Structures are given as structure tokens and as C-alpha cells.
Image (cartoon, one colour):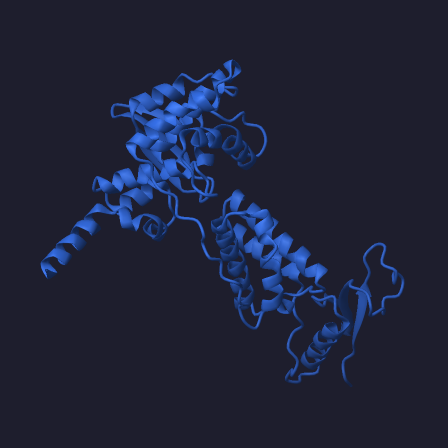
Length: 374
């Protein structure tokens, strides 16, 4: 006797077919039930399509009856794919910030797919992703940001492929970087930047903003901290020993520990700040650090770069301070491995990708080979 598996629908609240579990036309989730060994079993079909649920039904019936299944599993619901992917990232130890980015961006993908009538990972096509990518420019003007976004989506699709939820990794449109990479500041440009602080924040009521901005610029220039790590630096993260002052913290983006010595004059600027929260140099301790960093970029940092006549065509200008720290070390012969550690990069490949051309030893060796070829 053949086993019998039944497809039925669990309707969402407000569905016009609510009350009819065999309704096929709605987008509510499909489920399966059957009896085996005297017990009733239930299972989510992993799809909103009745036709796809029927494929899963036949596959289960084949297994129950001991037949080799000729039917592939139904495409997995996109929302469930995202949930498992996010859980995998948490298991890997990805930072809260990284988890937040994936959660937010994959939710946008899911919402876009829903409006296109696509509810499964297997239903995502190259054409759909072309239309989806075309919506990014309004939200993300920087091509660099859009290229990073593309990398995150491709990471999700690779996971889906490896989990056999997709037959292949779908092709996404390439993003041409129309902005030059951020460049380090010269000594004259950095001095010009500091001199522009009282120009950009000239109001008598902006005294605290002037001192905070100056201390922040000096900290980032001489420690290499990224903007969010610098703004959320705890006071106990500035330590003094026989060797002088040292900044120790953990990168919010990667969770990597960072420990870098800083000049005494940088420490003096930080210690002189009139802080709102006794635990931090800049942050109040309330709200989302990412939002605070964005607000500081707009209100305090960007106006100073503008007043100094220093621009980056859409890139985050504050990153030029971090670049200045890294390039200064490399030009003075510091090995790339040590610079990578100082920057808090998870992999030296990241450091090499952005700063290889500044490595003094490599350029010197290249010059030697070129001249020898003469």
C-alpha cells in the first residue's frame, strides 16, 4: 500500500482564503502531513507554491515506500535561507555590526523578491538581480559602497549554492569603481586640516566641537583607528607605562584586538577633553555607535575637510587619516605584516589589497631590477 502525504496551507492572518486549508492560489506557506508507524507527522514544505509542495510530497512518498526518489526537493523559502545564513554568521563569530549589515541588506533583497513574485532562493535569476542592483544607486551614491554590497550578496548566494538551495551562484552586474581610492594626507595637508577646524566650526558655542574634532583627528592620524573605533574609545583604553602612552581596543568591524603606541601630545589632547560620559572620550554611551559615527561625519568632520579644500568624491573622508597612519609606517620601512596588525585587519590580504603599492621595500627592489635591466 502506498503511503499518502497530504499538502495543505497554513494561511496568514487576513488571507482571503483563510479557513480553506486546501486553497492553492494564495502566497501562504505550504505544509505536509502524513501518518507513519501509527503517528502523524507534519513538515513545512519550504515553499509558498502548491506545485513545488507537490514535488516535496512525492519525494517523501518515495522515501516512505522505499523507492528511489526521482523528484528534487522543492526550492527553499528565501526567508528561511536568510535565517540559516545569519545563524551561520553568528556561529562564525561575526560582529554585531556585521550581522546587522547582513540582516538589513538581505531583508531588502527578500522584500524586492516578494514584490517580483519570487519567494524561494532558486527563483532568483540574473535578470531579477539586474533590476535589484539598479535600485542601489539611490541609496548608495558611492560605487565603492555598492561594490562592497555586491560582495555581501554574493557571499549569501555562495552559501545557498553550497547548501544546495541553488543550482548555481547567480551572476550579478559588476560595479565599476568610479572613485579613486582614498589617499593618505601629506604633512602639509594634515596641518592644513587642523588649521581648518576653527574655520569650519567658528561659532563661539562650538568650542567643545573644535576640541573634540582636533583630538579625534590626532587620534586617528597617529593610531590608525577607524572612525567608529576612535569615537567609541574608552578612557581605560588609553594606558600609560614606562614606554609612554598606548591605545588598546577591539575593532567593532572585525572584533580584532588593537594595541598601538601614540605620541604624548595625542594623549594630552584626549585627556584634556571635557567629556559627557566619564567612560568615553567622545561617545555619550547612548544610542547606536554607527549612527553616532555617521552624525559626526556629517556635522564635524566633513565641514573641516571642505574648509581645508580636501575632497574624496564620495568616499568617507575620515578614512584618509587611517590611510595616513598606514602609509607613514610603510614608507618608513615597517613590514606589511606589522602594519596589518596595527590596523586590526583580520588578514594581511586586506592590508596588501589597499596598501601594497606603498611598501617601500617592494618599490626599492623593483627599482633595482629595472635599473639592472638597463
